[in-house]
Length: 315
Image 1 (cartoon, one colour):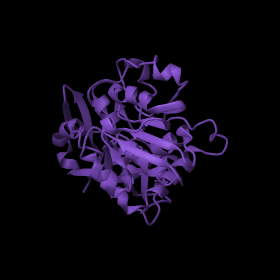
Image 2 (image 1 turned 90 degrees about the vertical axis):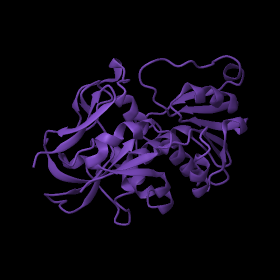
Image 3 (image 1 turned 180 degrees about the vertical axis):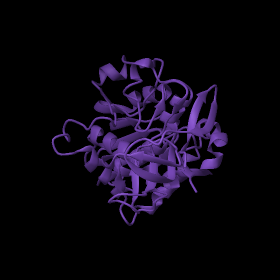
């Protein structure tokens, strides 16, 4: 059977089209997840030329900007080889079946529902952000941006003893999501000040400057967003200079230097899958579409500010 995949064709158009089979072990897709932030930048053609190579995903076909087959939250069942019948997570675009090398497959914990495992890539990113933040017991922490990654970062930090944590977003509907995870929520006007660590995850410069304002003396500001093409205006006078703030870039493609001697990418993903065992995290699945309807639904999913992680269901 010829594999079918979602392709972004430009001009806001997506279409299910044939895809190459690839090399490696055959996997039948069960669910994939739409990572709204990055996939929206790809769909809108906003990946800068300087990042075309580093932004390539496993299983990608086509080139930036169009046409392109892109995505990286894939949960499937192995159809052959020593892992036949196993449910796995891997990095691959939205495609009904595909081949991938064995070293790209991560067997799911038996207790993890396959439908929740689409959050694995976002959880892996959140783990890296928390590492980069160096949040310590008792810190006052602010997370700005209650998308899937920002909320998962807040969820992880909330389990550090003694932390005084607030999750901020301009969308008031995020308060219900935060409450279900036991996280304090605030609108931007009520964001706390004098924080030890501020993590910014809105993907907009409108959130980065308030992050600087909220940092206390010699605080750590962690930028977890990726902006794509264009430039952002950041105020580096005033509070940033006077308080001797530190601005840190967090990027999941590299393991922080303090962890690199002991942590591999496989170990990090294994931990991310383990951290998804909490059933409360199902609240981050904000919607679901069938693969057959994905081309029709895709533009609206990416455009909607209500999207956290949208799940795609395959027959």
